[in-house]
Amino acid sequence: MSDNQKTATLSLPNNESLQLPVYEGTYGAPVIDIGDLNKSSVFTFDPGFRSTASCRSDITFIDGSNGILLHRGYPIEQLAESSEYLEVCYLLLNGELPNETQKQNFYDEVTHHTLVHEQLINFFNGFPRNAHPMAIMCGVVGALSAFYHDTLDIQNDEHRTNSALRLIAKMPTLAAMCYKYSVGHPFIYPRNDMSYAENFLNMMFSLPTFDYEPNPVLTQTMDKIFILHADHEQNASTSTVRLAGSSGANPFACIASGIAALWGPAHGGANEAVIHMLEAIEHPKNIPAFLKRAKDKDDPFRLMGFGHRVYKNFDPRAKIMRKSCHDVLQAVGVNDQLFDIALQLEDIALKDSYFLDRKLYPNVDFYSGIIMKAIGIPTNMFSVIFALSRTVGWVAHWNEMIGTPGQSISRPRQLYTGAAKRDFVPLNQR
Picture (cartoon, rainbow, N blue to C red):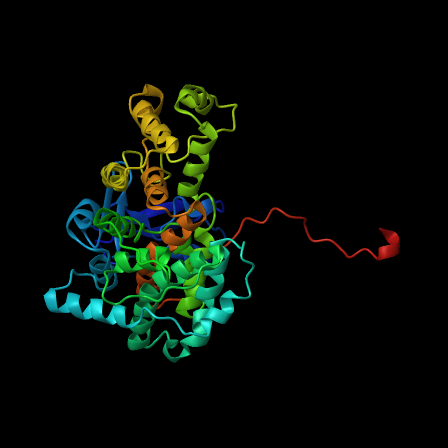
């Protein structure tokens, strides 16, 4: 260690001590480098990795206490207000916003890859029609490596770039195919004359007998949803992608692993849970009773879409989604009791000291679920759209990890609490 290197002293059980380096990032708490612990007789114990920085990253920063989310240093509010999803994709992948030429070239490259291999259609036919779209998504994304094996050398920069472009471009096509297959409709091919969000909505809702014309408000809001879900630092699915990628697995397999992790109700399924909660409330007059249940620590009922594991302030994404939610409901003219429940619940919770004192503000999942339902997207597709949006974040983190010198396979330790060593007992003596 250099003379000016900050260190922390760890006293070990055997009366030894260890000097551990302390590093500081651009923002956030300093970290203690415990890498040398493997030379000692102890390991750290941190279930869920709540207090462990698993990597260095230049991509995204979250300050949950102050409601801050930055992508490559840019506040999410500014990106959602002034940027487009594909421009944010370029930023996450390359570290800087594109100039006009770079932006156009990137858009053209993504557009060039929107089609999927025609034989992939046969893959869909192996799934039951009532299969959950996320089950199909896990399978078809993992299968992409069988069709696009010409860019699987992860040490080749050009291969990694092409894989990233293919994943970002094909995810809307695959997501729409998952929906169409589940309802028995023919697949709609991508339209390269449309924007990213407009093309997705067209593939979702057009039919050979009917040309869907997306409302500009819905298209803009869909693009905003993509931006707000593009990346969120070292969450469960991103960490899964990094863990899988550390083994040298191909990018399509790594992204499929992220989709599997995202499928969990505690992660990507939260906005679907919001809709189920609103359906359970059934009528605005029942809101007080459900709020009473939410406050009862002995009642298993929880108010879905409120609070966040990271944000202890208002989720900055939720502020943006709140406005978009009201814009969409006004644009589509929906007269639905479910939305009345949601709006009244939002109003009451934002005035209730129980929720305010505990910083249980409506989060991005609360609003995004309502918006997508108003657009006409079924609840079982919510997590698929989350996966579509988050793909660029997964790819950016995967690419950053592969490009980091000295990267090795991830191998967490454990605290073993099983049986002590014992001798095998023959079957007739047990």
